[in-house]
Length: 356
Image (cartoon, rainbow, N blue to C red):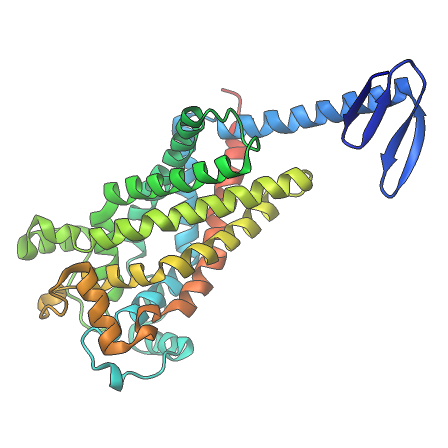
């Protein structure tokens, strides 16, 4: 007697009756009906896998477009919180830490509206989009390519075969994707920080003016200030973000395949954003401060590199100093990362349905 088990169905050969698990009870059906149910279940699984495969195998241009638009939409939606985060991060840079007021999102937001106007929340957003379009496009595209390459190298043909191997692939692929995207677009990231950090005194009048001014006053190397901290931070940041997102999304879709793509990607993206930001926020703060070194003709504060900057901040501001601005960062990443993954997945779904 042969027994075949699929999705809670036990089929006994010989054309006899079989027991079909249904919830907490069991239903006895004949062998032919059970085989029909098994076949239907297998067809549904194959269709789900084909849909996922089609969405992950859209053309290069479409994938870059989906990633770029997703990043731009997310950054525009969360620009006010991103600017608040940067302003909090650079507090204490040119001020005695003992004289700093307790960080208050509402107080700082009110000051911006009162002194600079409501539109100032989106100060530097044009350069943010100019940076985020290629950055997000490259990071999503590179992640898919690195992930496929690592699957081949490790001999893992598809997702779900081995959890530990899949998790390793997602971590390494996400880290490499982040480093690739950050290195390719770094000067725009530096300009974005300097434009967003301007308050009442306007030193840089736009993207091109900032690029020319930095190049003239600080040399070509000035456009890459803080790159070391960026690469150290963005590698683990995207490694954690992509790994948590991809793992949570795969688990959710395996257990609840009929749930909305929007709901799944928004929830899993928000979770991944909190996890990655908590780990990498100190490096992001150090990067921001190093990017602002010498900006607007100010005197340099940190002269000893990445680790010297860490020591300087901890000694002068305490451990809390390296997490200055973490609250608006959380407020930003929960919707921001959720939106970017949701938009990306939805665009992939829409683009995969367009006939080639």
